[in-house]
Every structure is written in C-alpha cells, then in structure tokens.
Length: 128
Image (cartoon, rainbow, N blue to C red):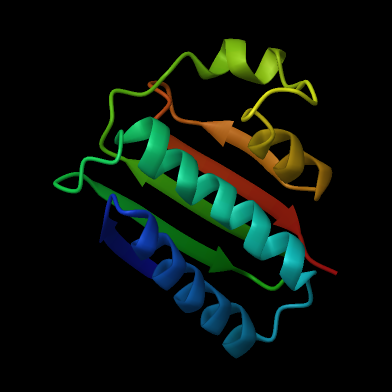
C-alpha cells in the first residue's frame, strides 16, 4: 500500500483509514489499536516535526507485509534530524507535552530505524 499526502493533520486521518483498509484486506493478525496509534504517531511526527506542517511538503506512507513481517515506511520532505541521539534518549517525562511517540511505538513491539538523514522512518513488526 502506498499513500502520498500533503502535510496536514486532517490528511493523517485519511491515510489511517487507507492503512486500516489494507490491513483488513490482508487479514493481518495484529492489535488494531496499537497499529493505528503507532502509525498515527509516525505520521504526526512527519507532518509536525519533519515538514513543519508546510502543506506544500508531502508525506509518503508505504506499508508492506509478507505474512510474517509488517513493514511501514514514513518519509517526509524535511531536512531530517539527529535520530541517533533521539533513540538513545528514548524516555519521556510525565510533565512533557511530547516525546512519547517513539516510546509507544517501541512498547507495541515495533522496531524503529531511520535513513541516514532522519527523514525516513521504518517500523517493522513480527506478525503472529
């Protein structure tokens, strides 16, 4: 499944609907709540932090599955970030308004990796 949309949080909702349809069509056995929340966090990060909500910039979502592994790629057109440092500091304080997305994604069993510049996120999860 592939979806490209402008950096707008309303478009994140539409991308999530398409992703859910793909998962249902493929009849993948995974926790739908965790899948949607992990994907929402990844897409929101691309829109808000990657593209800084500039609607002229796009976010690309690709989801693939071979029946054993689910792979999700989220790419934005931003400059990227120092992801190596961020992954080392993957803790959030209860009084912070943000910083919980990667923690949630990891807690749901997704592996997290980035391309060199940090503007393409890859999530992988073993399917039951």
